[in-house]
Length: 85
Image (cartoon, rainbow, N blue to C red):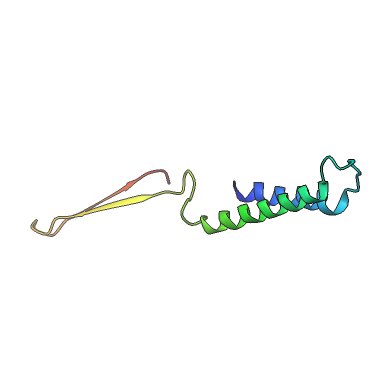
């Protein structure tokens, strides 16, 4: 679940919990469903923030490999950038 889905669930849950006034004859309590959606959305949003730095998504990963040749005269150094920029 991403940040957008978490915010969406919080919004839908708030609408069901606070704005809808429907009598379903005891079949389902929409206010409880709204509170459950808000809690799940809040947890998803917090987890998304917690793992935000560990996953950059496509196009944000870059690996640099540096090779140093100390025995060569002049100590040449090769740098190779791999991955999308």
